[in-house]
Length: 189
Image (tube, rainbow, N blue to C red):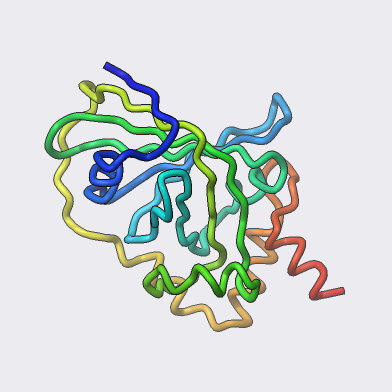
């Protein structure tokens, strides 16, 4: 049976710590815009308080969550048990993007292990936590992390990753400028 909470409870924290993957959902305000659901792996999520979470966001082929947060701040995290007792948990909140070289980045980055290609931290203030049964989620076994993203980002030199960010991560598929895109645009004049 599903339950609602106003914050992350100790049992939720324990559940989250056991998950090897989570999903992030966001959407633009425009009714014909694209809803984005992005799977995340690695040990990149941190719980800072019962109402604050953040994850280290890595360079990838898109940057939709960042654009949506810049526009409206809405974010949902979803965790689901694929081993052990069934459960699905969603964290609902308002998120923001923290870019490298900012004071807030410098305050938070020490909480994360280094992962090649770190491009921003997504920080969220959580206002609701919802659990549901997860009875329909099949069992899966964890075999390990894929190293492809890490290797891809290691191959990019600092200059190449900035060019990649400008080409692939500056604007969402719905035409919304990301904070990273705004920063790169101002640096280039």
